[in-house]
Amino acid sequence: MTLEQREKLVVIIGPTAVGKTELSLELAEQFDGEIISGDSMQVYRGMDIGTAKASAAELARVPHHLIDVINPDDEYSVAQFQESATRLITEINQRNRIPFIVGGTGLYIESVTHRFQFSQTSHDPELRDRLQRLADTEGVEALHARLAAIDPITAERLHANDVKRVIRALEIYESSGYKMSDFQLRAKQSPYDLLMIGLTMDREKLYQRINQRVDLMVEAGLIEEVRGLLNQGYDPSLVAMQGLGYKELVPYLYGEITLDKAINDIKQRTRHFAKRQLSWFRRMTEIEWFDMTDPANKPHVEQTIKQILAGKFQQLPNI
Image (cartoon, rainbow, N blue to C red; front, side, top):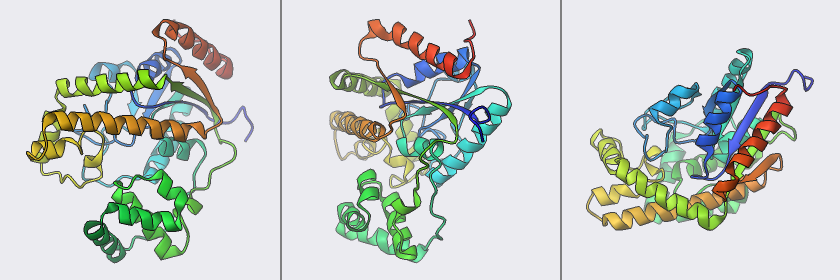
């Protein structure tokens, strides 16, 4: 397929709280775009505040996709995201519009932009139960260490608390003899006519924004949101309930820790998450980076990005 025939795709990535949503809305409005969420948590219904979903007013500005598609106790994988996002990119291009993938889940986004090939090995419930018992009796760190011994690349990518995915990686190895990282083959060149925009910020300023954002989430009703999920019967051990802002509030709601500790834990874990996001993105050489630290420089940055986008796709922005 020639460059002229390749489907258009814009990706806006960066750490949490850097300003992706605001920029993406403006660009999608001006360039006849539709937004595909590249966030692994925004697929869950009823998890709005903690996942920083766009507001109803923001969602009404341009079409959005892959938000509120499953319940918190439904399974969802990067392979499912890849399949859905790939289909949406084609459909949006066929409407003569531009798809914008916007988010901070590097694995999800890169699985689409560079067509990762994932394992199709079958599931082994007995093996999975045995690995889960190992995590319960010896701790999640022991399970993670077991993965690190056989597949250090995957172990580095997965946090020890992400028990479900650690178990899946071990399950693939024990059932097939291959490492999960062997299956995640990355195409050397994207199949898309791709523009990747990365937003970054001075780390101290970013951490301040993260702390402020958590406080605003609590004010907006995050505690009530988590309480509501528990009241609906969603188990705290679910993958969805391990998300930032949810996992930390459960022990508070059970009376095990103070609210101050829970909030501080959310802030600390989110800062660590932002650091891991940046580490992942720095490997992606296709990204054009823009520093959002200085608010006074923001109009210039936005104008530069618009010029790049207009030049790449020979499309003038709507006024």
